[in-house]
Figure (cartoon, rainbow, N blue to C red):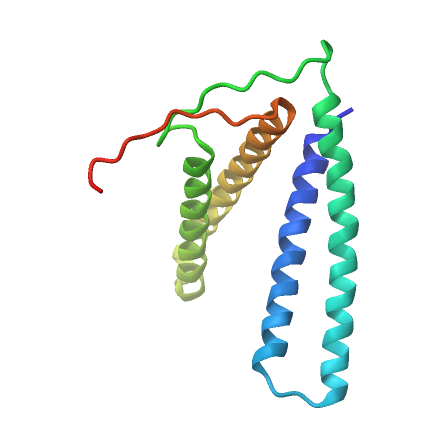
Length: 161
């Protein structure tokens, strides 16, 4: 049976490992290091690459469950998405905006006076909830697209070229 929470966790792990891996690779390329330090970092990169492969394999198993998870055996219905309303890009934009807002509140919280901290903490908590809900919605979009084998959307014409 398909497990949405597991799939969400696996996607988050893939993202986290990818970011760590990229950061370490960038660090190696831009920093002069003694051989011992470079060896440690290269070993960490190898370890992260193995973790990434393992998590990716687990995610692939979950994706296969999504495709097969249907009482009728047919792919799940994939609705036509409306630009600037419910497309994947619109949802990703929303996630980015909510992360920026959360970061803004966190920065304000660091500088806040004691009487302001409670209100800002509530705002940070709410942003975390919103981001989590949006991530779950993203996973649902991917699941439906993967299961149906398509991503259908209305093409938006641009006003200015």
